[in-house]
Length: 279
Image (cartoon, rainbow, N blue to C red):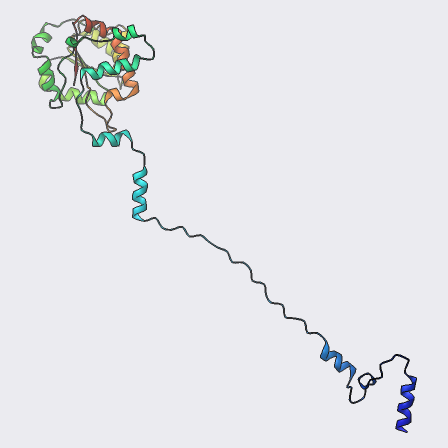
């Protein structure tokens, strides 16, 4: 009976159908659903993608050697050069050269020659061994007699020109041994008006004037100071400030000095009635 049923099943299958035992579902073929589960592809496990890590550049620490090299490459300043160089006393040639350099762009050759001063108008320059009092005594040994004979108002016998009011006060204090009973006047702008200085010069005879070229120029312009009786003009030439600058190294002071020289000083020097000194 079983064989008849099997034959009947085979006959009922459509043409071209798979008649293998695996397709008929016999014991030898197994369950078709089980076979699909066994042959189903297993999805691959997705691996976590690694994120790129941040990269930090660490600057190397500066060593002492590197710092030293950096300092060595620093551009040298004029103060550094002057601090290591030996000071040299000023000479009349230094003043003459500065005048030519200052006027070279605005004067003709003939006009530059007219600026030349005779050697006879220069006093002995300070060789850096003198105090102000000892230097003034050397260039003017007959000072006591000169100041006794001077009674002309609105004038001075000796002018000392420096770069600032503070320096002027230092010079006045340092010349006590030389000045004696001489009348000394401060000729700078700090805390003193021009009109006040003009009145003081009109009241009495003054022997010594110490100040800055800018204020002395202004006094001459306003008629408060007459240069004709002037016998000595001394520049505070060799002194240096905190930046190691001399008075003629400062552009503003240098300009005012040369303008002052042209306000009658050069002509007095050429007539040999006025002497120049470099302290």
